[in-house]
Length: 157
Image 1: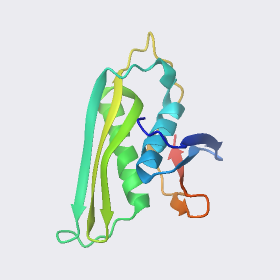
Image 2: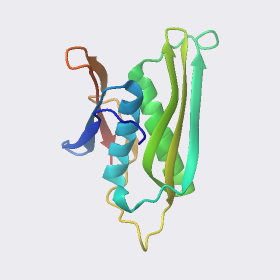
Image 3: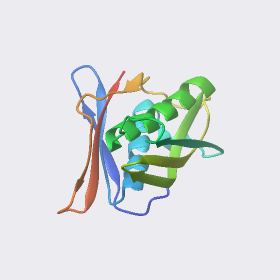
């Protein structure tokens, strides 16, 4: 995570699943921290070397699609893309950098990098397999008084 702001996360328990509460001074930092929190549930990220990088880019122009995405939707898309790369390419990630995040009423453009390496079961410590981030209790909001962004995400395990 390249963000230099006050960012962090905590893992929260749920009846049959697990989740995170994340915070950051910037929206970009919140997305980076949320990804870090998700991979902290999956594995011991301190063992992951950032030797590979993967670009994650998605955008939407409401001129083409009438669905109005919100920040909750984009956070889910981001975490789903990372899980896809994890599952299909057998990768673990330990740091993230959101390079571009334009979010407007007429669409969005999201570009980020994820840094990590191929899974090595002889070296990496795997904790839990996450199936998907869910919309249950999902929230992305800004606390204007504290000047912090917050997110809550529950993962299906």
